[in-house]
Image (cartoon, rainbow, N blue to C red; front, side, top):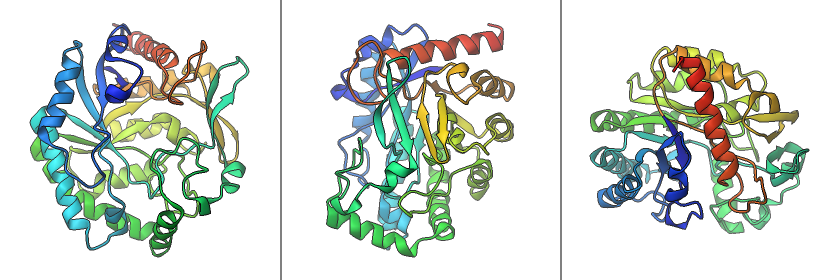
Length: 345
């Protein structure tokens, strides 16, 4: 199923508009006003689902329920926070939402250094450049981070970064395993499939550990708790930023085990070591062979939700960087056409 991300009532792109994209019948949504670490109420999730259904679509994925930093750090408060997370997952199941996309990135979620890089065709796109990142002054908190949604004051960010000095990759894996061992059984019994998103970009930033960066890491995730509910979000754009990642091979390995529960399909062009820019979705515009990616998904029996993920800003559109209507709609139709051709339908 081709899906589309919707940011709720605050999103300038309405469900009415999304419903008019011919291939899109599923929505990826979330509750954005609940403090991180607090349980999501059943009635709020159900209300979100009902709003989507009023527009003749289905709520297929929650993206995401954020994981509190105390869980990632392994602090004593984590047990209460994990319990709250489990309650949110139970309520997802009760509300009939089948997939949860989440991540385990310390402090910073997906990160870009340019929200409007001008491309040759005049459109603008998200981009990441390692040398630009190195010039960002974190002593100002998150003020200098382009598009960063979670605001930290200078003192708050310093305390958080200091706390992570004692957390290396091994410790972060231990803390992640602690989380999975408690949450996955709840998800399984609630009819919810956990879909971990790879780190974006797939390397350390600001000296923080990042562990979900390649195929072996994703395989390790699924083996920590060997349960069909413990799976991944395959994000081609995230993984392809590292040229060592063989996307079809990753899909075939994890897909054969039934562990890919959600797919983000966007394209990127690598512009240097640890540098890239996002592009139009078709294969010829970037470094991802989208036909090979969707072919591998098809060959391994993938039947879950797919979304076109980020898009460029085109045709004079303005709005939330990466999340305009026009290019994501073009991407959705491109993916639908590829899938129809590959599947012979």
